Length: 359
Length: 271
Image 1 (cartoon, rainbow over the protein chains, first blue to last red):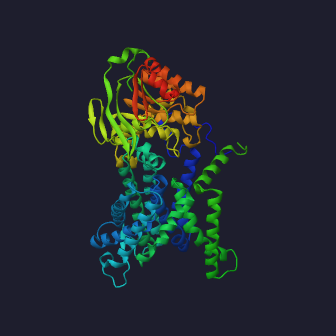
Image 2: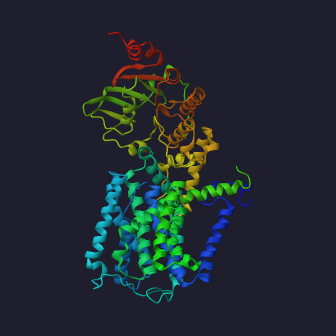
Image 3: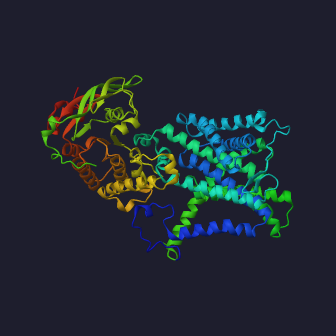
């Protein structure tokens, strides 16, 4: 009843091509942004912000990256974690070499390194696709993970073999390092994610997004439209790895605050991000957020939420129960809605539009 | 799109027209299988040229050679007087050859509008950074091309399915969207591979009308493969007949219809 587009006429193509053509959607987005910028820092405690919100934002960005590659261009990758790792190590090397440069700039620049590595490992994609390409990207995962441990130059010859995040300031406020407050790190993550989501949305709604989807849906016909397959696929690999690289740098610098990076960027993380994309919805940006919330935040919320609700459970039991519940939910979702949470969201919106009538 | 007036389809006056595409002594083999053997014909500017023949005659292989999916081992193909070697499909597209497929090859996950917009890809010049901003020049360009695409949508009378994903459309409409996508490229030569396969009479009549309109209003040269002889005889200016990869006849519909070899190929001969 409240979600109707009746009476909202569009008289220009620009208005018709807007990403959110319905007024209620724009209001909804504004409310979500208000909550993210004002509500959560006011209400959420440090624990909620560091263990739920920051991971959610970091994984959302990584999932958007993989979604561009797998959901929009149809190329399966199992090397996302490795590309994230490239971003993290590049950022570490960069901030060591140029301590004076703004850390936000360095996080973004480290994405470029990841993009270059992504293009390199994306080269086989012209010849192979499907499972075989997945195996080829798996090689990237193993090789890069090996390099993170075996090439001491990457972690500045530390005895511990870990990335030690130095303190860096933004407008005089510490953003990274031990003294950075969770709220500051959250705001930085939030701004980066919003800006990069906007760019991703622009790309997928324009010419480039259409050529990616054309390659995904029917590569022969795409070639006939004048799309060069190798260029389109490599661009997808580059953009996707750029997003993964920035997410990786954010993960170490703004969330973990250092640590055994080689252990973090393992194959499990790659699979987790692939699950986020599949459960959230292939070829949907909002789906990436849903998927990240589902896979990354749900376990934490359940682990700490169940005892808080008065369900008596020890920490270890809670962890096991969480594993089982999340696993079961994944299977249920894939059976009920194979197109992911994004499709459920669309169906829900369609129902709202006609409510209270069935159609 | 230039709407230069063309003479009425079916008139035999086009014999003098300029040659747009010339196929000379083309042979194509897959290992030991000869798909096309020593075929030569030409397509003149502004005509509707039909390629017919029994199943497996090499018609689709011929189209695939023309737009660069296959490389013929012998012979040459020249387009607009220029000989092409090692043609690639995206270069054929840039040269002005568009095509539809026998079994619809639409981008199933995209809307009708996006499918036809994809046909404009080559005409859109703005690079990555403007695309990432989707404001200013990129948006102006997008709107400009949207306008052209809306004209095509009007022309094909598919306004009502503009925003629907094409995967769910009925077959006849899918064929029409595919024609629209090819038209969006503003081709000089349009290759249609069985545009009327699997359609009912009414849909066939609609499609015939669109093909003639495209030919006459936009002056697009058309080469089509079709099995419905009534359609072929009505639509085309000249017909080339293939059998087992060889050309057995070439001429106006009435000449071809009277050709003994063609009759034998379609009806069979007593040995």
